[in-house]
Image (cartoon, rainbow, N blue to C red):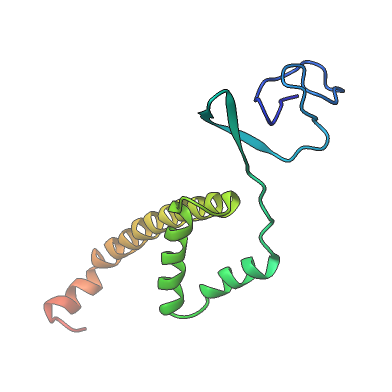
Length: 135
């Protein structure tokens, strides 16, 4: 079990309190140490995060169904959420993963499109049409 306050681990999985700092395993929210000190005390920043509601996610995905403008706004929002300093950690991670997925999808689409166009351009019938020799 890992203590959310000091970050040390203990072998006792049934422990209620940390062996090193004495904080409770059961009741404490997730906290992390920023390693900033004022005198002898260490400041702890509470990283409590509210879950993002279902309708928010539904609206985010619904944005991509708006032709052209929806995609532009959606991509801008993905970049804003992925690289913001403050805000929801889960939204930041989701936005980063979505951007990586979209990049891979875009690369795959370009490859398949170029492969299909290459096959189409090498077709003898298409070459005759381009040269003006209609059938």
